[in-house]
Image (cartoon, rainbow, N blue to C red):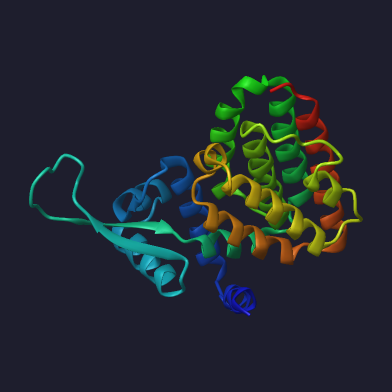
Length: 248
C-alpha cells in the first residue's frame, strides 16, 4: 500500500514544458556539483535571472521535487548569515525518468550495460572496492527504472562478492536467478542478496544508504514492462556469470 501511494503521488505531478526543462537542468547541475545548489549558481548556469531561478526552485519545492535548507557559507566557522540551498528529491529523478522513458532508453541502457560489465570484466577482484564505490556514486543519476534496477542489483552482488560470498549457480541467489523472469522472482533475488549483505559486516560497510536504495529498487521494478523485465533478468545472468568466475 505504501509503495502504491508513492507511485500515485509521483504520477500525479504535472509539469509544464518550461518546468520540465528547468528540472532537467537542475538535476544535471546537481549531479555535476555533488552538493546542494545556491539559486544564484542555478541562475548563472541556466542563463536566467536570480529571481526567476529562485521562484522556479520554490515552485518545484511545492511539488515535492526540490528540498530547501539553510546552511552557513563554508568559510564561516562561527555565527553568521545562512544561505538557502536546494537539492532535488528522489521523487524528482523518478518523475523525470517517467517523462523521458522511451525517448532514448535503449541507447541509455546499452551504454550503462557496457560500462558496468566491462568495468567488472577488466577490473581485478581485489579492486572491486573501487568499482563498487564508483557504482554507488552513479546510482542517483539513473534516468530509467531499468537502469536503476540494474545498477542497484550490480551494487548488491558486487557487495556480496567483496564479502567473499560464493556466487555460483547452485547458491541460493543463483537458484532464484535460474527461474523464469518475473517481478516476484527479481524482487526475491535482490531481497535475498540484501539479506546476506546486511548479515555481513563487510557487506554493510560496502553498501551504505541501504534502505533508500532498496525502496527505490522496489518502485522501479514495479514500473518495468515484461520485455524490460526480461532484459534485467538476462543482464543479471550475465553479471552473475562474470562475478562467479572472478577469483577473490
